[in-house]
Structures are given as structure tokens and as C-alpha cells.
Length: 84
Image 1: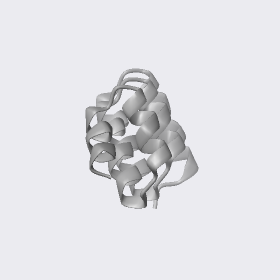
Image 2 (image 1 turned 45 degrees about the vertical axis):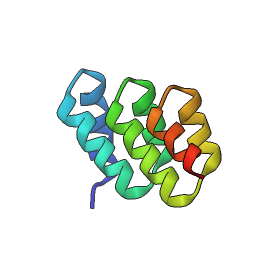
Image 3 (image 1 turned 180 degrees about the vertical axis):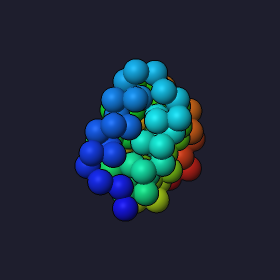
Image 4 (image 1 turned 60 degrees about the horizontal axis):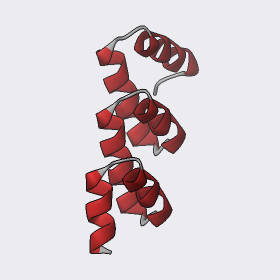
């Protein structure tokens, strides 16, 4: 289990440009279903975070989140919406 200080350290490292830290944050946020963390990482340019958001939104049937992602340019989210 990761503790708050470890998350703080990973976020700091990610802000300093560490791709490894970003990757770890995306993985952890995906495991926790932490949409806020994933949105923040996506806003900072992480395509992996966008992909994880799309996957979680699809699993949860969260049409509003899929629409938000599609509106922001995610073709995967738009494709899923087209299938619904």
C-alpha cells in the first residue's frame, strides 16, 4: 500500500519531469479509480492518463465522462460513445 508521503513524492517528481513518476501515478490512480488524479495527469499531457480515464469510464458506464473526454479530443471515447 502506498502512503500519502509516497504520493506526494511521486507528484513532485512528476512535476519535475519524471516520466517514471507519471507512469506510476497513472497506474496507482487507475487501481484506485481516482478520476481526479487521472484528470490532473491528463491535463498535464499524459496520454496514458487519458487512456485510463476512457477505460474506467467505459467500465462504469459513465457517459458524461466519456463525453467530456471525447469533447477534449479523445477519439477512443468518441468511438465508445458511438457504440452506445
